[in-house]
Length: 341
Image (cartoon, rainbow, N blue to C red; front, side):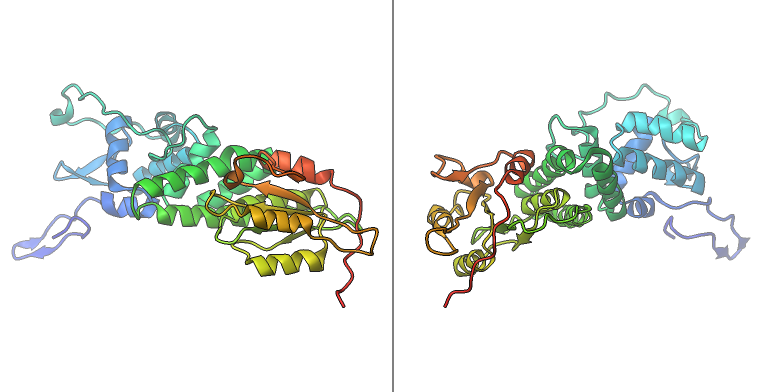
């Protein structure tokens, strides 16, 4: 009989029921962490069950589960694991699990643990970044959503994006690239929740009569999140936007520019392979209005793909804050273009 089941009726009468509680594997699935992580927390921080079946198999009672749930909540908020373990035990009124005679020997030297953030290559970042990474790796969508919402409310959009969201997304992307197909589900979940958080940013009343800012990824590029962050930031400033998303075809982009008559066009390129300089020059040369008073858009080259010599008459912002500052200074209200005959 597996350790997941209860007592059985034998030929000699009823047996004693197996101790109350769930096995480690079931608990790990419930918490969204690996069983190895649960066992490691038990060994390292004394967060283990008070009862073990047969003296060996861990059986987690409701009180034990409460400690681990608090541990997960604290680590997701950026608290280091050792500190989170002490706080979780204090909050739930529990003490470290007693050691058995077999485990009373001196502990073995601890192996080097990956950097906080569930092994993602985060580097030197804010604690909120590590908490977000832990929640994402656990695929804990509600925790990710709550962390992102609190982050934007407490620190503002620019800090939330530049110091937490973007570094965590880059770390997940690097981990995915070096781990085959692993972590792709983490990147998808995190990206979806980041996008949702950006769209919840409250916009200010739109400036009357101001020409909009057009935002689009160049053909072949699908990295829309930086443009979504910029769109949210422009909305906070009351600037009108037209967001076209990823991989906009050349003809469609050209048509949109001529129909809208934007004050500025932001073109995102993630890599040099997609940075289409002739396209950028073509957009910058677009014009509309009556003869003698023609209007041209200011072109912003956003993203690492545009690295290299800056093309004349264009701007290359260095991050979200820089882009918002420059775009907020762009021109006065511009009338919409007249329809072509």
